[in-house]
Length: 217
Image (cartoon, rainbow, N blue to C red; front, side):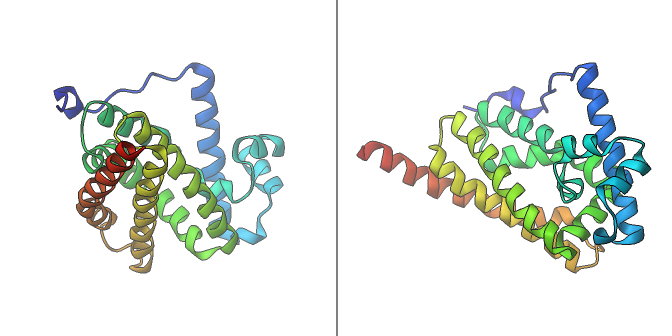
């Protein structure tokens, strides 16, 4: 049974002052880096130049982002998205609805308010080879994070959840690639909604398979 409270977005616990300061610093550094990359090219800009322009130390950039590619890949909305998905799954919503509500929760801030940053990051994800490689690693990490959330709901084993989450995550990457190929002139949500349209069928198939495997053990 679906809990009616799942109809509304959950409010994540308010971060403490230190966490808010860190998030603000990361956003400032990332914004500064993206501006430099756009102006001079990704390969021509060093971590040290980013740090100097952002008025932080190079060690701060490395500590927060790990690599220069991390300055492009980092997405401050990932945690908010996963929190909403977990909230909805725990209250009985299907995966497609949970993902849709998670996206609804961040969409305005991420794709409308921060559209310029999203376009810049997306362009570099597909233009710069080293960023493409880093994106693959991060998507696979995100797949496991979502799979753990799915498995925690009790409806999937982690192994099955990983397969489903992989399909969702990489299909969304494909939708973003289409948006990039269209010169960012189309609505990216339409492509993402195409993914969500076939997700219930995948969810039903994998849930049934998972159930049979559990009974067979």
